Length: 161
Image (cartoon, rainbow, N blue to C red; front, side, top):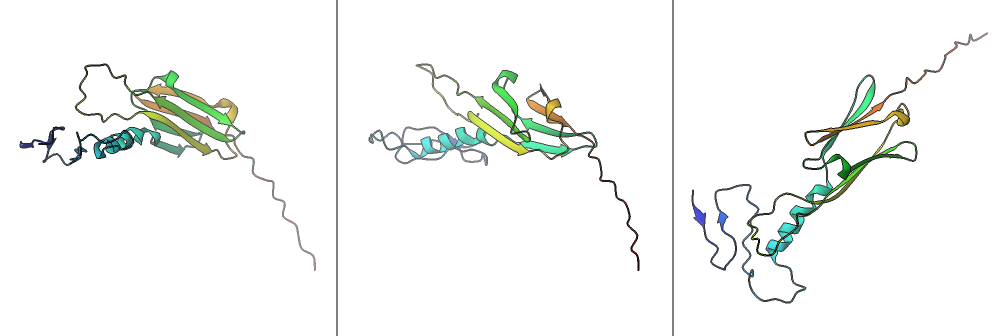
C-alpha cells in the first residue's frame, strides 16, 4: 500500500482508498485571518452535518404502520418520539460532538454529530393514542397500530322508469 505524504505539513492520505475524504489543501498551515476556513475544515463540517438525515423506513402491515430508524450510537434518552397535531409523527434526536482534550491529536473525524428531525403525516387509520417505540442495536422501531376503517354501507337504489 502506497501512502503519499502531504509536504505542506498536513495529514497523510492514502491514494488507493476510494472512500477517503481527505482533501489536499494547498493553503493548510498558512496564516490566514480567522474568518477564512480551510478546505479541509469545510469538508469536516459537511461530514459532521450528515447525521441530520437519519435514514428511516416506513412499512405498512395488516395491523400497523412500522417505522425503523437507524440511530447508531444513540441511547434511548437521546431520541424523542412524539405525535403532534393528532396525525404527525415526529422522530428527533441529537448526537453530541466528542469533547476535545488539550494535547489530543485527531487523525480522522468521520462519525457525524448534530441534530435530526423527521416528520411523517400519519393516515386516518392510525391509532395515534397507542404508538409504541423500542430501541435495539442502534435501530429505533416505532409501531403505530391501525384502526379498521369501516367501509360505508352501500345501498343500491333501483331506478324507475
